[in-house]
Image (tube, rainbow, N blue to C red):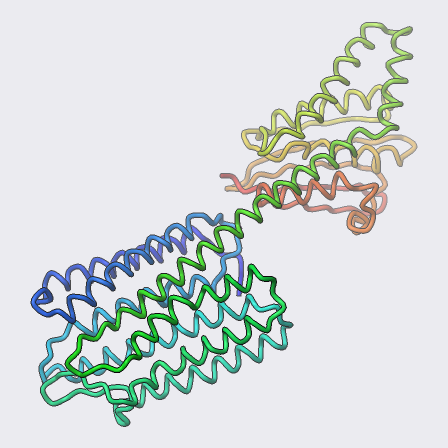
Length: 463
């Protein structure tokens, strides 16, 4: 499940919670007599390391996301469940082995096993997403997962009566019967199923290796935990948490590599779109008409011809420089480029083209070649379609934490849906919309009515 969320708020709440829990664990270690008891000491140390590493990983994972990024909730759930499971291990070893604490120990250990099963369920949900299966097949897999884990959770919750997983002796020591392995059957069954599905899946070899590596560490520690033992042996329940931690780091490494690949792909797509925009901006008819106008001016008005050549060269230079731009530019620069374009168009249309500026705010940035394609569409499909010409208005303002850039023409209007269907004539406007969304997290809205004109609005979040 993915959705748009407030990453900053989520990060703050999550990290405050985690560091409070780590502080509590450190206080418990200091307040309780842990050092003299080998079993609690080993589990406290391991779980403290796990808690700290999960907190660091969660912090890094959330800080790399922007406010508009889609958060992978399945991976986030694994982080949270592992954190809670590790802390529950700490709590289960914090009570003295005395008969008056049996009830508290029973509740704490039951919670620990339930959280361990929920952690396994979180892993299972994440793995299912990677299989190349249709939606119906994945729904069946998730249903089977829920049924299996629900059964085992009920087994743990009813352990108070059945004593299938563990029970406490009158002296307060925990006893693990031979049926203890029932608690590990669930994750073992899942990993066997995971191995089977991975081998028979249609995923490529690299993806299969990644899927198999996910379960390696967790499977290793579950097997170690399932080996025969005496009730006098030291129980390292935190070993499974440590195995889960290794598995999570393998997952995170794969996520990190995928993000790098995706970023590289988006960068290539952005450069390709910038090239398309530049080509669309230098249409042959615009070149011919501009050069023809300059040719006429050379005889009638040499000074104006000289100025037009200068403006035209600046226009071309700005288009070319946009190819090397990897980020956003100041609105002032975009407005200057647009004014150069409009001054050239004024030579052709003279009094048929009127331009009005209402610039109330300009201290912001936006992708290069953003404003000019919108204005060009207003001239090309708005003003040029009217016998008496028309007016193009450029307006900017800031309201609350949002910036609005509005381009309006009083031309004949058009059907906004043609932008998606007619990629050849509207490639500049279509790419502009995509770049605003991907580079700024903004929006581009188009409103148009027949004989009433068109309004194009860019909405940006001020950062």
